[in-house]
Amino acid sequence: MNNKDYPDKMSALQARIFRDDVLNIVGQIPRGSVTTYGIIAAWAGWPSHSRMVGRILRYTPGAEQKPCHRVVNKEGRTAPGWVLQRMLLEDEGVTFKANGHVDMQRHLWEPETI
Image 1: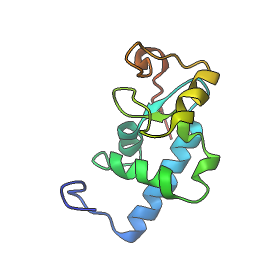
Image 2 (image 1 turned 45 degrees about the vertical axis):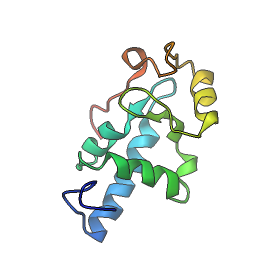
Image 3 (image 1 turned 90 degrees about the vertical axis):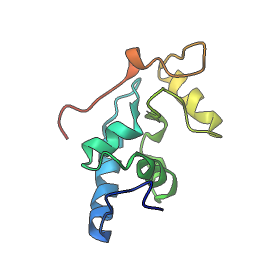
């Protein structure tokens, strides 16, 4: 982690709270919807930490029990190298555009209250 990625550093306690908030938000994404790393970071109170959201979802034990496949980047791209993600989303009725990105206008979910 470098200062370029995270200009506003977290304490260890803030990082644990952020992790728990991220996992809570991901657990609320409805079937057939997606949200973005940036939206999750903003709702968890650290809008500049969207990359950390991805790291939390990838490296936190137990995160695989959450619907992590419903998190994409702001353009609707799925995670690189995770072929199963698209299949899981399609099984839920999520549609993709010709460029391979999720149709964000149809499927974007933004939490109203957490």
